[in-house]
Amino acid sequence: MEGEHIVDRVVREYTITYSRRSRDNTTVGYASAKGKTLEDREVDAEIFATVIEILTGTRPRVDRRKNLIYIICTRGHLNGFARHAEFAGTIANWLNKTFRRRQTL
Image 1 (cartoon, rainbow, N blue to C red):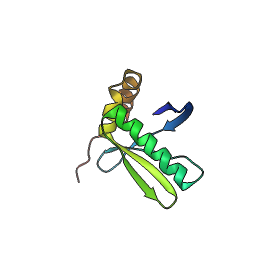
Image 2: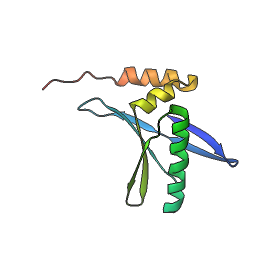
Image 3: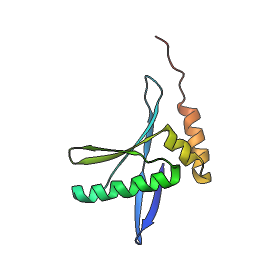
Image 4: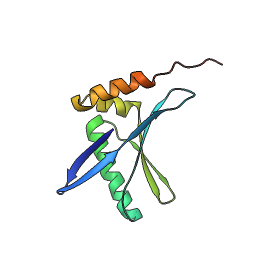
C-alpha cells in the first residue's frame, strides 16, 4: 500500500509492505520511518503511526532496532484501510491472491 499525506505543507510518502507468514498465514505489514537522524526517524514514526491510527482506528506498533524504526501493522489495520474506497479493491484482490489454507502437521 502506498499513500501520502501533507503536514505543514510538506508531502510525505509512505509504503507499507504486507506479507503472509507461511506457517500460520498471518497478515503483517511493515514500514520504515525515514530521516537522517534518529530524532528525525522518531518524529516520522510518530506522525505515520498517528496517520495509520486515524485511517484504521487502531494505533500500530512501533519497533526500534538499533538505529532503525519500523511501524508494524496487522490484519486489523489492513481491514481498517479496506474501509476506504480507494484501497478496498486492491486489498480484497491481494487477500484472495495470497490466501493459503493452513497445513496440518
